Picture 1 (cartoon, rainbow, N blue to C red):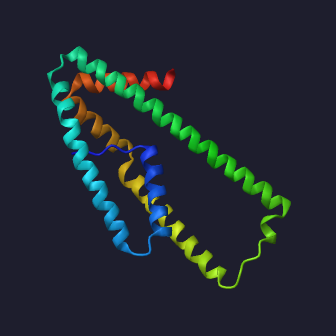
Picture 2: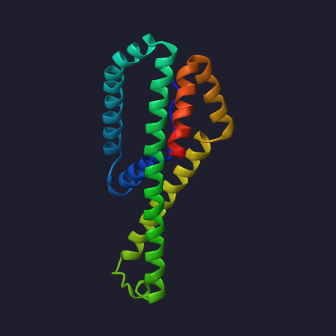
Picture 3: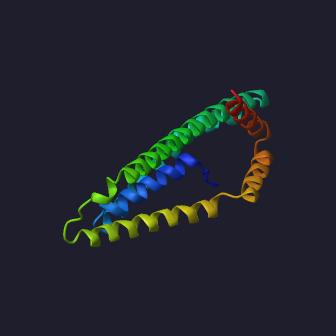
Amino acid sequence: MRRNFSLFGLFGFLILNLTLLLSAPTLTHGLQLKEMFDDTKENFKETIQPAKEKYEELPPKGKFGVGALAGYVATKTTVRSTVKAAKYTGAAFIISEVLNQAGVLEKVDIPAGGNEMLQNVKQKVTGAVNDCRLAVRKHCSVDKARNIFQVAIKKDKMGTLGFTTGAVAGLVW
């Protein structure tokens, strides 16, 4: 089964990893979360199966329509989330630059032993960002996108064309 990858998923992955790295004292907490996600995945498969069976029964025009709606909604959701993330990132950068220029960040007193904690946090955040970077390199490429599209078009031509049409409409409108 192929997995879809989006910027929203990447952002969620980054937040989850940062949360786990900064708050989980042991690996068992992470393993518990993995088990919880695996259970959720199985429950999702059981829930979606009837809809998948109904989709397979649809005529080609119906598959095109469902694909167009799914493409439109997915694109709108992804673009909206990405734009919000970019706005918040930009705002945080501007605020940090203003605080730095005002000299507020230079006057921060670090308590004894705080440097070790800051170094530890810096190391964990850097590692999480690097993991994200590697995940993007692994999962996102033009060749992979082309291959996924070709496999999808062979499997379900009308649904894939509908999804593509809906995605373009979502970007334009």
